[in-house]
Amino acid sequence: MAGVVHKKIAELNAELQNALITAIILTKTTPNTFLARDSSEFRGVISFTLRDSKRHIINCKVWGTKELVAEYNRKFKIYDVIDVITPSVVPTLVHDKSTLAEQVRFQPLPTVPFSLVLNEGQGRLDNSNNYRDVCAFRELHNLRRVPHKPLCSALKLQDVRCGIKECSAKEQFVDLLVLVAALRPVKEVRSKRSGEVLNCLELVVIDGSYSDGVILSIWQSDWIQRAQQYWEAMRTVLHLIEVKLNYSEFYKSTTLAFTGRTLAYENPIGAEVDALMQFAATLATKPWDTLAYTMNNQVDAAEIKTQMTVKQLYARAEGQLKADTEQFTAVLYAMLTHFDFDGIGQVISRRCKSCHALLSRNQSICDAPKCQLEFSLQHDGVQYECFFNINVQFSDHTGTLLETRLLGAVAERVLALTPQAYEALSEQQKAACKWKFLMDYFEVKLLVRKASAVRRQMSVIVVDMRAVNIAELAEKICVF
Image 1 (cartoon, rainbow, N blue to C red):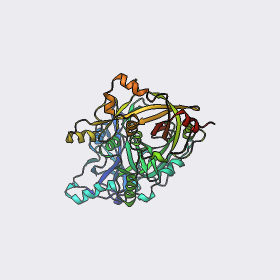
Image 2: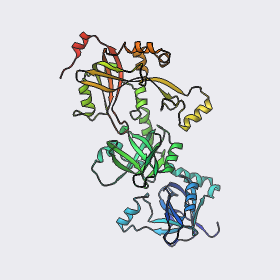
Image 3: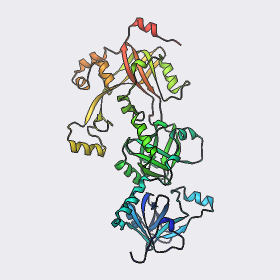
Image 4: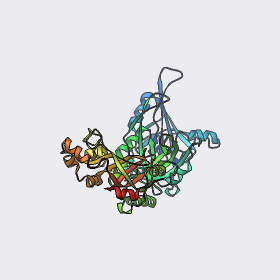
């Protein structure tokens, strides 16, 4: 390109003119549109964070008409390689700590004391024409997996979730190395400030120190789109730089927020990542996913021996005796007082054969694009599988346990029925089966998981149950 000089970020200075910088987009902001002071024209601004080497990143701000900014936002995606042509190189006021703090509050911290500024008509962005140098392009593109900060400097989830206090007013930002454990459906939230409806994607992330999961919220549309297209549960590792710590009143727990100053490197290369993946492979259960957990719990019923009453169960799970452990087991001797086997309550649920996500009552096809692609290629017939998912309640002399679920293979064994056989029963047969169990006494072996940010209510799963007579009940009953 005539008249321009190709420069690296490390070579920039305030006197430099007619420079061309080829770099990869690490992140970008949502465009901001405003009415110009001296006219009725709408103007816009958008910022990109760029990188062209293992060491250096820089922020680039683009000012222009509303249409130009919208076009740049549509045209350039995260991790695209672009050319920045004839920008102004503006020094950042590193000597003024308050100004610097304000500058990096809404954008990543650069590694050089400059920023790039483009004004419409005085510079532009373009797709990189450097594709002829395949090695150079590949090197730039691979920077999405090479963090500019060492992986070993990342903190542990267990430490940060215990370190933040509910009353802390100071914003806290940390670096983490986490595995995406689950992606929840995008939800719509109305902004209290503007009334605008915003999209929010919540992820559950884990690491080797805390496998129960922490919520990571993403509000930026580009990152939501990126996550939905490319991130996979239990396969995508993220090195998060400057992710924000929050205390959520809704979840009553520490959560993470992806902000304008946050960077994410996908599946970085390093021994720490290999160790995290090896740890994830050892997880027999998925406590962040209630359905997956309950369908695949590995608890040995023979090892459950601690007897409790309903009152003791609640005390340990959420009351005055609440312990630090996330789960515990117990043996309960109680009467089955709620078993809506023939009524309006849910008895059979469906889950996707591919991703095992729970489907709604009227849903027969998973909404996930990856599942739809898989089924379209394999033509596998029915795309879901049925399983028992029954709410049951047990009562003893201390109270009633409301949250218990009888699920999957355990339910089939106890009921001596398959979901398909249940659906073939008449209403009279369902009622007869119900009264074989209702109002009888049982020894119930339970797995109790306490409420958390990724599980809003305590979860009580039947691991095993058998009927007991009055004589055995009298021997086992606890009174306090």
